[in-house]
Length: 452
Image 1 (cartoon, one colour):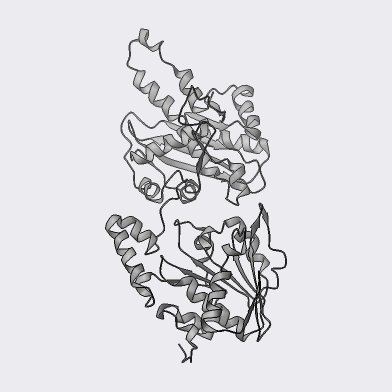
Image 2 (cartoon, one colour):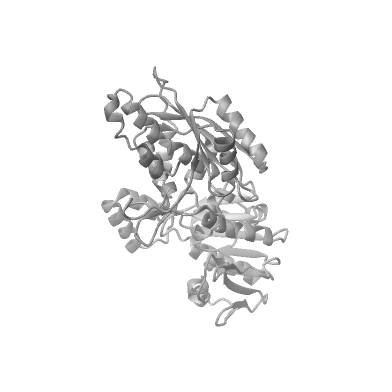
């Protein structure tokens, strides 16, 4: 780094000095400064931010996902730094302005009452987003194309929350993004009180210590159904095909909206307990005749024994054509009706029931999922609670509104899993005396699975 004579306000930790190098700062458009508590991320960049605003005439904005009041922004941090170093800025009720360059610093939340608040952001020269782990993909999808100036800079300071925080997923691998990670033990200004808190946390929980103080992201958020660890473990659960097995079940998710895709997903039974993904296909074409033909083609080519088709919405057409029109009894419809509290005190609908059946298979190492896109989608599935405090998956419509891609592959997999109970029931009863088979409640298995 070229020799720089730095004012006292830029006495930053060594690891962050690279952002002060003009050659480095000009090279990148995006900067992600991440790490655990006590790493001086916001404090350090706040100092540099004020330095830039004092030296250059800029349009500068400090933003967050939501900001109900100025107190929820970095306004107080900047005001304290201005007073500490006696910097030439005017501090007003909701703005800060450089006396030297007349650069105004404004503060805003990108979502106000559910609506985007990015008017006038096109001409911004520098945007600083603090607490960037809270920024959603939907906000980034709107915000990034809005900052249009050629040399504009967007800086994110964050304590990572989960491994797939949108800022990390969307930007960290880009060639025009510089990622700097810093923790309390790399910050020479970290107080002894903070260091003591870190050590106390370490004594109580190594996992919490690594997340809170070393910035290691969690492998799932509190409302995520599947964790990164268990999903990755599921990729390893391969088993040879045992003699007498090989039944294949399939699930089909039918596209309903513009960027949705139809998905056909096949699982094969490898043994008494083990199942493995053997085929996945997706297509954009939404013509129902084409979709129906493709479903029939894959069912025949893949030697599928039973196939569940999403019968809610547009899927009813292909299902009726195949099961009623062609009278093919190996097609069943999958619906997602609400389940009464008397019938199930834990889950509120069929989709949720079968998503947790998949989770049980994963935890028991009884299923092998290989498709990377399916794994990515499974990690976006979250749950909430209904009025009876039962778990229900967050709907695809709500996910779409939050800017999360519809989990079509994951849903097709869940539909295929819904058929496993029926297969195992038949296998368990095939050697029973005929007089006992009449007590089999196969229709109840279908009902719980959401198929008929």
